[in-house]
Length: 508
Ligand code: NAD
Image (cartoon, rainbow, N blue to C red; front, side, top):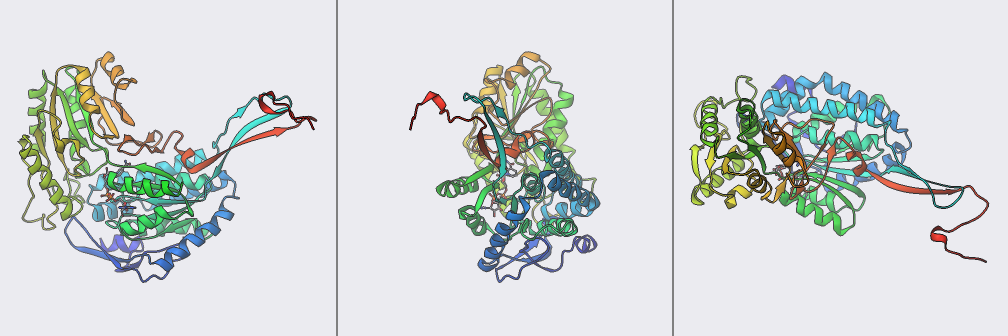
């Protein structure tokens, strides 16, 4: 890992604050990054103090004045080069993601690939920031709309996607003409430094002014500062619902804009018409991938009573074959949880489930012994519940899968929707009627609804996000770019008169 860290410009002690190429001095506290893979310290990061924060925001504001004047396709060209730089560093960055966050190496590479994909998407988008034209009711008048950049975009990200979420935001924000200030999770500060090093090279080669691509490091307080800062036009925040509610209130109090990507409680309906051969890997990957630490992790299976026992038996057998261990070893399916607090939350949820009447078809537990010294490796487990117990309503960020039984498709859809969150959902069925019902206005209430694939593993191109306590934001694909711009309506009079709208007369 030493070689990888050196390749990515990570030292034993790192400055955490940057305006692009420059790293600013700071007297903030020190963050120590530990790997959940082996419990070993990796390196330390100096957090951003008040003076460094003030300098970052002032530099970003200055940079915006210049960056917004560069034509969008030219900004897109710089984002294209950013995608190429990420291609060059994909292996090293993917390994660091896996080592610092604990996800499997394949998922670490996948996360960097997602960054590359969003760059490609943003390059095309830079020539497609379309506005509408309208017919005016007044003669010899023209009406149209334009989309302009907002200014400074603050990006607060979570530990579980330590690099991809930043790129979903920054690639789009940049082609739209904004400048960005990133506050990554305090649990994965080194991934952010590695990304900053990769991108700053591209920005330097293109003479991009300091302040377009900024990094600040710290914990919750720094996120709160960004949310409350009226110079930050848009705060895009990814993380827990608790965090999102705090950010939403703070940003709304100053009438700023927020884009929220929060917790999920995702279900798959397994119909009696399902192809169980597809359903099984879809459910198991969804439930145990990233050790249950994806916002789109499958947390509930709603299974038709006629296939319930048979499918449960298949799941139990599949869980018996899972290999848990070092995520950098590609032989393993499941890596560690991020830290011991996460392990505690997992154990508490298991206890609560038992107290509330849940029965475990596959028991959980913390793994000990050789290879598990970090204390962060847990067994993915499966609980059977008769109804949506309080613990089932809650997102526990760990590999706990709840099984529920249903009789009718209406009942299944109702169960799927009866949780506070609304991110991702799926149905496994070959029956056209129930698939269409699930996707209809009377079906799933989630931002993502799939047929015959699982709940996790979204691709760039579709808008990503969810409803209810998931926060309502949309990122990445479709028209998500509009969140990073302000709409301006323009009416131009090329007549010799000044007719008023609605036929109002005003004679002088
Ligand atoms: P978290 O809420 O603890 O922290 C996320 C980020 O918010 C961190 O950078 C943290 O420092 C910051 N933060 C915390 N409290 C804050 C506050 N009051 N004001 C401003 N910033 C604050 O979340 P986590 O444990 O890092 O990540 C897991 C959560 O993120 C899960 O709930 C998961 O579902 C969610 N998530 C959602 C998506 C999505 O796209 N919907 C994607 C990834 C993760």
